[in-house]
Length: 424
Image (cartoon, rainbow, N blue to C red; front, side, top):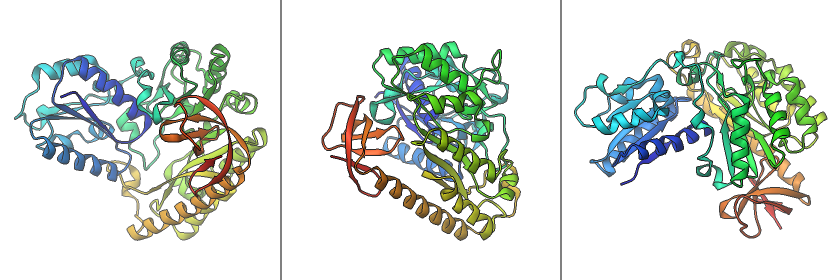
C-alpha cells in the first residue's frame, strides 16, 4: 500500500502534502495515512478528527500520522486519539529525517506524550526551500503551479490561530524564487501562483528587505516566457508601490486580487486588531479599479465576530458593493482557544449562521452580475481537466468541449449558469 495523504485547508497545505508524500514514500513507509490538518476554524479540526476515525475503521491495520497546523497548535488533542500513531509538527514534517525515523520506530502502544514530535514553531527562521512547488500537478486541475514564497505571520489578529501553527513571517530569497519559476515554465506551466500565509509581508526578513512588488516585477522581467503570474490572498494595507505599478502596467500579472478584509466596520476591525479601516479598503479597491479596469476582487469576510451588532454587520454586508467584490469567501466566526477573540462576548450561534447566509446570498448576486457582464466577450482562459477553464480574473468557465489541460485558449462567452461562465 502506498502512502496516502489526506489534506485539509489552504493551498500551502496542499503543497506541503505533496512534499510530505514524496518524503514519506522515499523513507519507505508503508500502510500509512498522513492527515495534514488545518486549524483556521474549530470545524476544520472537527472534520480532521472525524476523518481519522473513518480512516481507521476502513483499515484498522494502517498507521495514521497527523501533521499540519492543528497538529502544531493542539498536538495533545490528536495524540490522545487511539487511532493516531504519531503527531508531527509543521517544521518537522518538512524534514526527510522525520519520516526516516518514523519508518525505524513506527509501532503501536505509545503513550500520549511519546506520540508527539512537535517543536517550537516560533524558533523557525527560514522557509523550507524544497517546498517551493515542484509538486504543483496535484493542485487545481493539473494546470497551474503554486510557488510558496513566504510562510508564517508576524501579525496577531485577535481571531487567528495561524501564527501559532505556522510561526513568524519568513521569506524565500528572490533568486531561489526566480529559479523555481523558470524551472516550472520550462516544464510547461503557463501560469504560476505566488502564495504564502501573509504574502504581502514578503521580504521583511531578507537582506535589503525587498517587497512583494519588487519580486513580481523581477520575476516578470527575468522569466519573459512566463505567460501568467497570479497572486494568492493579499493584505491590501501592505500593498507596496511597486506592486501597484505592476498591477497597472504588467498585463501578465493577472487582474484578480483576493483581499483579506474580514469585516467592513471600523470598530469590529479594531477589535479584530486589523491594520486597515473601512475607508482604506474602499479607497484601495477604487484606486486599483482606476489603474486596472478589468480587475476582479475576491475577499474573506467573517460573519458574527464577537460584539458584532446588526449595524456593524450591515457595514460588512455593504462592503460587497462599496468595494466591488465578486468572489466572496464567508467564514462564520469560530472561536479558537488561546486567541483574544475567544474571550470576547460572543454573538448567538443562530445569528452568526443567519449573517453568514446573508453575506453569501449577496456575494452570489454580485458574482451573477459579473457573469452577466461577461456574456458576449472573448476571453483568454487556462484550461483545466473536465472541460473547465479559468479566465484571467479567475472566473470559472465551462468549455463547449474539453481541451488539453494547461493550455491557453481564446473562447467566446455565450452565457452563465449562475456560478460559472459557459463558453460557446
